[in-house]
Image (cartoon, rainbow, N blue to C red; front, side, top):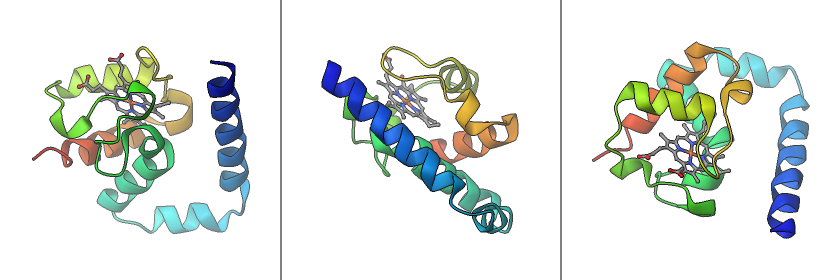
Length: 110
Ligand code: HEC
């Protein structure tokens, strides 16, 4: 348990460093299409638990490609977190980003 918390702390710190890297990162982001932005946000904030294909299941994460939840239910979990999943609201920053990620994870369904 302690180890797990450490791992999460370290990944978070590493992540924060990666984000501060350079303002160039932001420019690249704004030049991407909405689909690319959704994919980038997903890779940055979700893939470590859910996997790029949604099926990884790290830390007990649900398989997103098999999710039967409605948009509203998913947005609620993204904003508030659930069980071992922390709230992603602060990391995603805006409702627009939440919607971009939402479109991306719906695209993981068969
Ligand atoms: C720290 C690991 C972790 C991260 C990061 C994470 N999740 Fe999760 N996620 C989980 C866990 C664990 C669950 C299962 C929660 C439960 O039902 O107890 C879950 C469940 C979900 C569900 C519900 C799926 C279902 O069918 O029940 C959605 C949707 C979801 N996550 C989306 C996301 C998105 C989008 C992101 C990125 C913005 C994200 N998650 C980041 C761990 C994570």
